[in-house]
Length: 274
Image 1: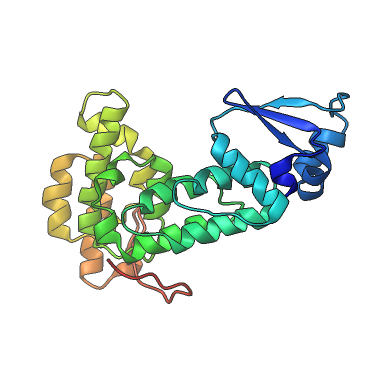
Image 2: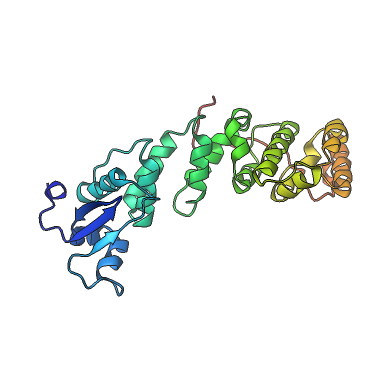
């Protein structure tokens, strides 16, 4: 096999001090990125170029697995290498391999890895629908996912995307407590003193996504008020809307917070509940 013998190899990749041989013509045929690299305007004049790679994307084993796929169209994707192979496929524009990686991750989403896959896939939303699959899983299993210890370590951008979901299967009262705990941990991560003011500050992109009007009036008037999570004016407006909704007058809500109940729409992809 050409990949194994390396006969006629005319490019060398250097990764972790190891030299990995390959054939430019084959790489050019598989990837527009390699095409630009080897015969584009910025291509090296060297007939056998040596290209140093950073190991922040993949180690030697994963890069060789990636190269073997380019030669054979065969690959063993597993939970140990899928992220590295995905990043390589994205970097070198190998759409078929990217699809295989995304499908593998979609088929292996479970409670133990959902937040890890969500964080990873958020970066590649323009490439595949994996992040949407993660959100769907989270929505259906919200009361378990949102109480995972790892949830409090999520970046605010991921938390915000979760809170935007109309089909998040959780009571808004419970969601407030979950987000308040996340905000406390986020305050600590930023090396700030845990004060009401700092908690509000780190939650600025999150607060508007909580649906305070659909919380119970008593919960707002006692629990939420005691945390001072909202400014006085926002709290007053949210409480007024909550009372209106409890009296069946949701059309009269005027606060800046979303008064729409979270509901469960029909889904194309069905994930099991845990």
